[in-house]
Image 1 (cartoon, rainbow, N blue to C red):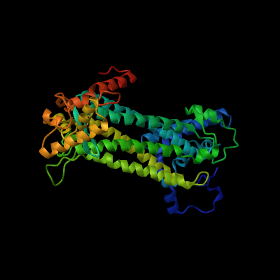
Image 2 (cartoon, helix red, strand yellow; image 1 turned 120 degrees about the horizontal axis):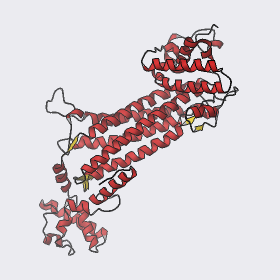
Image 3 (cartoon, rainbow, N blue to C red; image 1 turned 90 degrees about the vertical axis):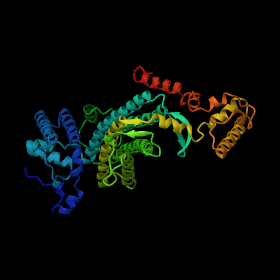
Image 4 (tube, helix red, strand yellow; image 1 turned 90 degrees about the horizontal axis):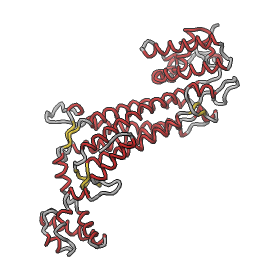
Amino acid sequence: MARKEKPWGGRFKGGTDREVEAFTASIAFDRRLCRHDIEGSIAHARMLARQGILTAAEEKAIVAGLRGIRKDFERGALVFADADEDVHMAVEKELIRRIGEAGAKLHTGRSRNDQVALDLRLYLREEIGHILEAIEGLKDALENLAGKEIDTVLPGYTHLQRAQPILLAHYLLAYREMLDRDESRFRECRVRVNVMPLGAGALAGTGIPIDRRCTAEILDFPEMTRNSLDAVSDRDFAAEFLFDCALLMMHLSRFCEDLILWSTEEFRFIEISDGFTTGSSLMPQKKNPDVAELVRGKTGRIYGHLVAMLTILKGLPMTYNRDLQEDKEPVFDAVDTVRASLSVFTRMLGQITFLRDRMEKAAAGGFSTATDVAEYLVKAGVPFRDAHGIAGRIVAFCLERGKTLEALTLEEYRAFHEAFREDVHEAVTVRRSVGVRDIPGGTSGKAVRKRLREIGRRHGRTKR
């Protein structure tokens, strides 16, 4: 039976303009959905056969043909052309070429609109799984590193000014907490991705007696969409995915910002291994933290994809519009960028040397234990606001005389308040400052070790 060149060509007398054909083609990027398109088509064919819409022989031919196409695609032997328009039409065209008339029956009871919605959901369901694995790998790396650096002290900062001493392990576990939230968001997103849209047709469903529940079960979808209009036009799940990616990358970017600063000569808290740095073509002494800078830079790229997706969606009338062809490239690039960033960052983190002595010396500077002076007075019965003012005046006194809190004599302390005793010198040491913050979520070694044990119990591991 002779067919029009385009599957939708029956209504048209003239051919598509070549420039328009190239402009509207998505096969160059949506070919990535080929495996998922075939997976959905195999499930659809099986359902059609169970409903008696296809014969057993037609089902067998279609499934075998689709599997052959998938095999050729995976080994790079399948060639797509712009004239194929999109991956759905390319696969169908190839199927008909291979098995003949039976292949033309595959599209019964569905549209490209619900088909592409299905493909994107199948793709994201799989990729979210990979991202979750990568997040778990980074969390484990942070946990292990925190265990090794449990006694390392460094300055904590607010406003990028030295604030109070903290444990490096506490710092590392702060990012682990962020990743816990990222993981939770991706898991929740996957629940909303994992909804089966096939059967919505172009927008109104289908008059063919299909069994949507059967298709959902074959594809392991726990839920089906409840409204055909929403099913073909919904990309909330894609926007949510991009938001989750943006927030994850923001966390990595913040971490990278610290690592970049810490690797400078001004800080010199860390040494990033040669494998994750580069040099200068002009200045032979340079060692640049390019990996950390690129992760930081790629964060903006992900933000752009989120804004692009929201902008695509904001003005669309019901239901499907060709604008939605533009949803895939932001999603695909976000997947690639996030997975690559998580992988390289995790590996880089495992090859950083922390310069502990330098960190602790910096932690002791900048009057970082001034709060401990105020708290010392509070414990002696002085109201906090008064104690705060006294501690501030002591800092000003030290600055005028070029002294540190540790170097002040007891007589000098007592000139500000009679509550000071000899033990004030112990109270203003860095180690003491860290150790007394022994509350849940605090930076003391005891609190951090407890948190590591909690994490270990949650994952069935014995921790410190």
